[in-house]
Length: 169
Image (tube, rainbow, N blue to C red; front, top):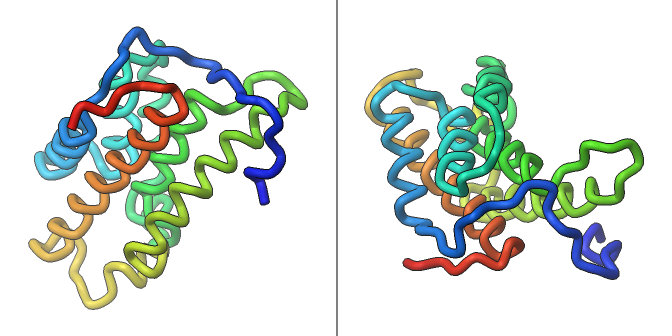
């Protein structure tokens, strides 16, 4: 539905000096941030996308992502990695001015990310995704590291496509 709203290409509100991007590198970096305990899922995705796309966005974006791990602040609702990916999409394609129609592009791309995750994992609910797991145990960590990497990679693919960047792997 949202895709039908676009008659012309919407130019991102943030640009990059890069002309190519490594999806595998983005996946690995975001997974490492989570695995090493440097950042939780949403934070790892936002930081990795910001850094690897060389976006002129302050660390405040990473701080904003700090409220979403473990399904929104521990509520075990929507997967924090997906929220982080949507935030990263918004950093580039979101609006900063009232009534700017670019919000539709950002929403459409975020829905694409949502649908990709849901197709792969059947749900976005952290509580269901981690059912039967103890938070912080090996099984839980392995799964959430994987989700973080996959979402960062999916986000990067979507953004690279929309920004006309070459994917080198």
